[in-house]
Image (cartoon, rainbow, N blue to C red; front, side, top):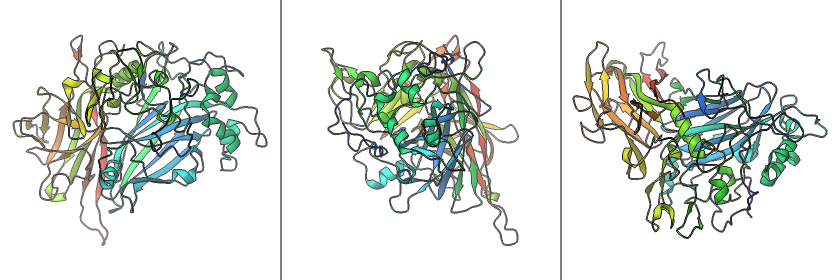
Length: 566
């Protein structure tokens, strides 16, 4: 069995891996309480993960990062819990189809903050992470400072094409577990003392952290508690901003989204499920993976003779947890029903769903202003995704086909919620596009009540004047009013992975974009789970020989779906 803490080399050793035993798997364990030597603090979260507009939660989603066109993205992860440490999964996903391009495990001590910079590697062209922070990580800091990984990107791509797909995307930050204070000491450290800063430095004791690379050590509640873990409480928040190093006067705050597990009765922050996984490339058995993720590429199927068919992408330990790993409730894990990954993915999508997106834009020639809108779909991965190698025999009822192909969740729809399905998506090249539909126009307003809609003055391209807007890629970037000074494909962010243009009749104003979902419940449109912001820059007159360029970012204004989560 292969084991490699440098599991950032995703899939490098997939060939020849055998399925691990049932004990060798990531976990989702509900705490039974009270906290003792053998039990976790009880899980108190209801079924639904909800957004916290206050910015603090169990999970953070940074909707966009970029290292294109001279951009760097700086971000921080803060543990505002001053009592418990946190074990945190950090995962970067590509803007193209949310493929995992870099992930690691982070340990935050109480009150700790971790920072890093994502920039473009001048040699390889990939994004790379640089940090001097001394909080504990698996792998360690020496291995963490490196370029992003392209092992799960299309094999037929050139090195330059693969590098391009690492330069834009979004970030998932998931609290996997609390690390409560214990009776350990600096001389005889356990997990709390192995990761807690002493005089500004975390010891990161190898003899303790190495135990976390063996899945059998935390396979059940008692063994995981013995390692020093507890169920995850709230307290995590993330911040990020993009700075253009070609012009240091341009930078944009990049507001993240906080997701929290709450109690069903009162809606206050609660305890979630323990969802730790080893940061290794051990294989995870298909039947175990099916209980932990709704990702159609990591989920296996069943052949006509009842045998288990391997997943399109063999699931490995570092693939877990993801945003669909059951995090709430006390129901037993299942492939269907309330305790299933499909249920969580659907409910989280419902919490993010909006029926329209609105924001301001400026493209005034007099000040050289430019505006890009970003649209991030962080839960689409668990409903529909792209396979670059086709589907294996038995998945979807057919023989292998050449990739790329769209692959949809085969799990039974959870109470009828269907956000991304064949009827509202289409494959264009290597990108899966979400079509907003002919009844969902882009409407542009100027500052004096005048308005135009798609097909009547507002044009989305590539495409025709009557084509509805489609979000191609997991993170789509829409450049407003490309022109001679701001040509198409050369927006303020320099986006290239999944970029489109929209042309209006006005140099400044605001846009409203309808985002209806494919289902309607009780007369209400389900909406689409969309996050994002408007990024604008402008050129001012030099003052005392110094540039006076300006930049700002506004988070999208949305109309939440009226459909209640089940």
